[in-house]
Image (cartoon, rainbow, N blue to C red; front, side, top):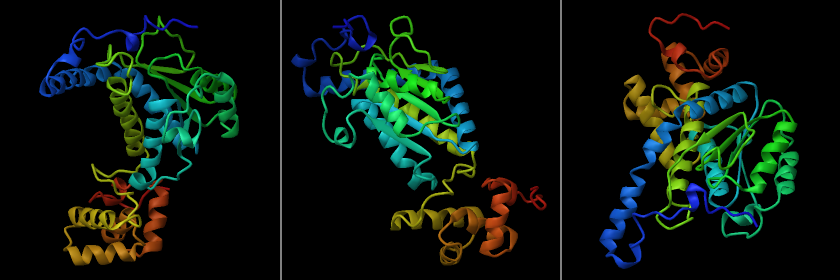
Length: 306
């Protein structure tokens, strides 16, 4: 059996050894103080996070996918981030996907032992028919998960770009990925419980990767989620209407009517208003800019270049 006691995520945290003997208020302070250290650890990995985002943007622009792979909390966070992209950015659900060791049952409860076999991770990559246009992003905060290493190895064999995310030092756990993101948050408040600081760091990094990648491919205008799926629920209809009001200066009733005429697509509605065109022409114009809205709304902009 491998001894993992030297890994950062397995060390005891001297600042929380008395957590079982303090008041609830003091326990809250301990966790809050430890969580406050996470942003600096994420910032220290900025160059590697940037490189990972560049790989993902290139994959999206080539028609490829971002595929997260993880086990336990890491796998759940990958699936969570993937599931949030379509309603936020109106992205194809196939564009960002999550694979979790143990399958969908592991989203709701622990599937013990599912992470222990490299061959299962490799098989999951084969099942997804991963190819050269894809990025496979392995998440293993402790760094050693065989399922993730097997998936990354098979992804490289199939020509995909790979990213390795861990909260342990490279000299303790090696990787052959194209990009390694090491967010060294240190020992957990509860020894080995990587659902805590390591999990929070994971969520922060995944948020950055997909959010900035979606911004770069035109899913956001200024800081507005103009590709939001307004057909999903009434909250998002309201958000879409308010975005149109913000950008165009229209009153609410006029903005709502414009959103309806656009088929519920905020970007189309904004181009219809800015260019004085119908829905079909607005959609054609958006196609010429590959969905980027700014060139079509710029006051001095002429007809977009094909």
